[in-house]
Image (tube, rainbow, N blue to C red):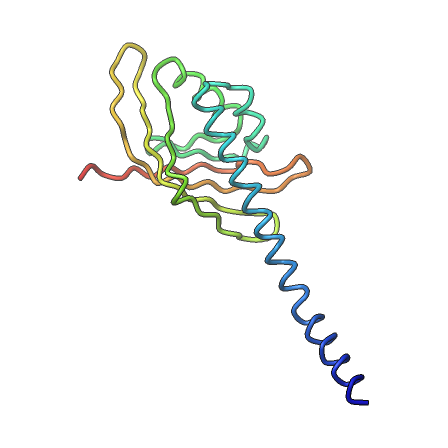
Length: 157
């Protein structure tokens, strides 16, 4: 009888802890997927690969990118803006040691990472600018997609 009671107790504990453990593992997997997408996004941005960048953005009119205090709504408008920026210097250097993913829900996440941008119009010398990059991502049938980009300028010290 004692062994049976122990067995029932152990099974009850496993049942109670199981879903939490699985959700923690799922969150860790999602965080790794978000990190991988961001690393691909940075590589595509630095290569000025408009097609690859476009594949990572949510194909929605609700996609939002705040740039220089101005909202850019929609994937196509964002790609048009990126295309113009790619004519000059456009390079991102994230501090991946400070990269964080916040699980907002099972299918929504926010990422945060400090980034140094080298940005300048064609023919001008780029100066480094430090930003705190925030992105919201949604899980779709095609994997994670970037739904919003909010880079916050860190004022020069």
